[in-house]
Image (cartoon, rainbow, N blue to C red; front, side, top):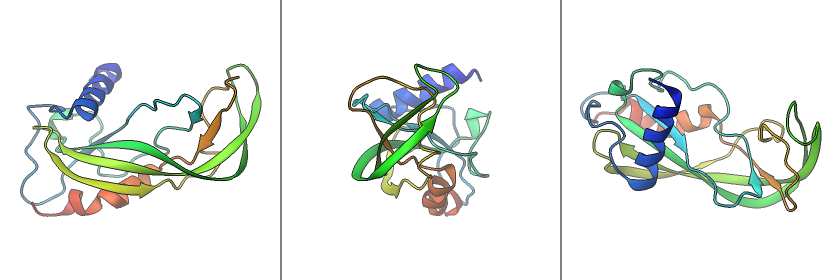
Length: 167
């Protein structure tokens, strides 16, 4: 499936609570229950971070949306400032920028992919390094800060009981 189409399906399902894919398998029976993940867009453009960092584990349904049973919708919740981070860039308005670095957690709403039904809401702490949390492009926006990103490993660990459990 085209990456842009999948992204729009994820976005719509997460933002509106509608089915991600009505032809997906039902979330039922013995696991594993394959999942997909989407990070909701930030409304504060001054809070920058990398999207979910790293390669997902065995739980992520990579190409076949019909096997996806769960959709994890992550929303960043900024915390306290921890210090500063210097980010290096290959594109954008600069080759490096130093910004304030903030702790962050993620509110993860887990939905059944087939129906959009909310299964649970989890709070998962961001766990990437400051450098891994850097955005991919430099900006000149006054007031920019960087928030700690969520890794696929931490998200997978939080989702593990749902992925491997019996429903």
